[in-house]
Image (cartoon, rainbow, N blue to C red):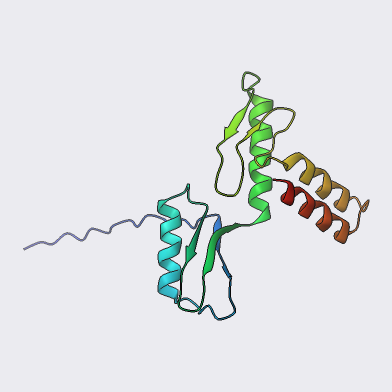
Length: 148
């Protein structure tokens, strides 16, 4: 009897471009287990439209959201600028409202995915050029975030 060995190729494991951010509303909120952390991550993967969750515990709520690295936002902005540069017929790309952000349309004149992307990009550029201090950049960013 001749047996043939077949090696299965495993699909590459793709990590999402975000990690979970858990904020305790109360100091008494417990630390969640690794299994719960994994299950919450999977819930966010299965429901990409989900903005946040509130995990209710005996010690108080824990707010769970996605935490994207700042490089991801800049990459999305670069891709949007490229789309508008390469396809002149594209006049806008609408991003629907979420639980934390209003609807926004990126345009050739404002190729940013968040509603205040142009303002934040100007703040980042001023900081990089040494025109403002890091503290001033934080104040500007907080002012923009509180307006939305």
